[in-house]
Image (tube, rainbow, N blue to C red; front, side, top):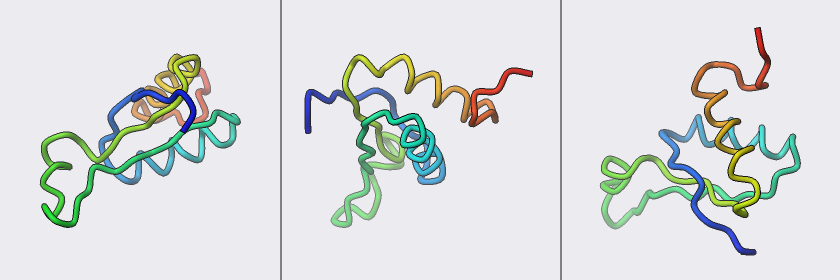
Length: 80
């Protein structure tokens, strides 16, 4: 993994999948990691969130903007 750092915490798998598709479409290299641990039956997901998105720091603004757009219901970043 290149110089990746945690950019944002994701709320659920659906959000993670949408963000992954959006970032792939924009050619932004990233990694999505789930906090699920079978040994603890998902205990950490209830405490920390579903998982996190990691990327190079130079992509932080683009990723946080894309995630904000998803959470606002505008996955393409379209302005009304």
